[in-house]
Image (cartoon, rainbow, N blue to C red; front, top):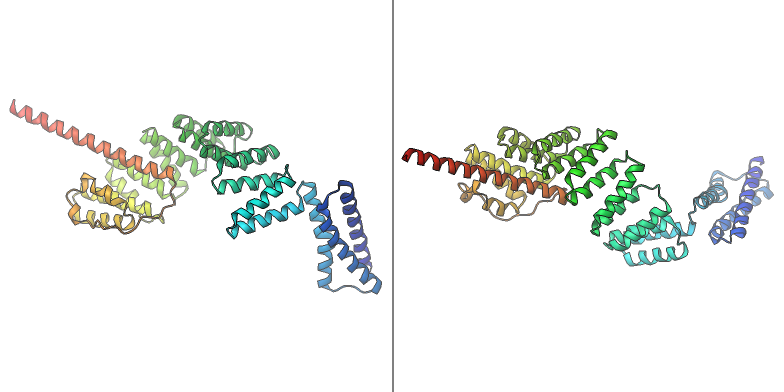
Length: 392
């Protein structure tokens, strides 16, 4: 009995505090909480008047109504989070899951009218615009969210990405540079900044950012992988190879790096090493990586005079990814076996690679093609010189 009286005193004190805040601040946010507290107090006093102790179920209800909900309300209020606003944000998520985007947007806009300085509503509005490809509006909302909570660093990355979508790379570069001055160990910001510099063809500057980030996080495979891609675009294939290797050692499942390593080995005519990397790639769960690996294995087998194996590998490559048909048809290496390859379209490969990675694979393939043509030209010139020498 003493327990319930003590509990009721505490509950009444919380009720009075909540009521004072409601009156003082004229904040209707507390009305719902007050109603629940009042219901809980009535239950308390009923048991006190009857001189009985409530059972476990009733105790749980009383704790929820008189303590848990009011305390949560006070915590939200302290953090300047409006309870009704929070409920509306849950509604937004619900309607988004039900694919009712417009109703979700209406609720968000209403929230912003009622709570123009709400960080949560501005951030949610920014995310809504971003999901629906309204990048100019998303940019504005993320800027407001950052002004309201400048230490929420993830928003800087999102805004930088929006700047990139809007073709404002320089703004994104400035934003992330300023962030890294404050938080130089923030690896994700370094990767994002490097990507913006890479997209702007500022490859040497991107290398500098990655190298600086490695001082703080030398075990981050993505930094090594990004450096490998950037050195690839600088045509510094020796350094690219070194960093792809480091990335694949730290993350053994990074088969895209192994595919790039195989391509670079081909450029240097290191066929044994290239074959080793491509054989590892055929175990990948990415169909594009697998298809590319079989395509290059077929090329190596042609070079080594193993035409039957080359045909098998070429057919597997096409079966995985029909886009390789036109590439194989235009590849002079396959001229001697093209009649035995099944050039029937089946499907396009599913891939986890992003556009940047796909462009690197294509870039290395084109580089290998250029090197092959130069080699063939050198051989032709050498043959012509031999003929001239013999005639003389």
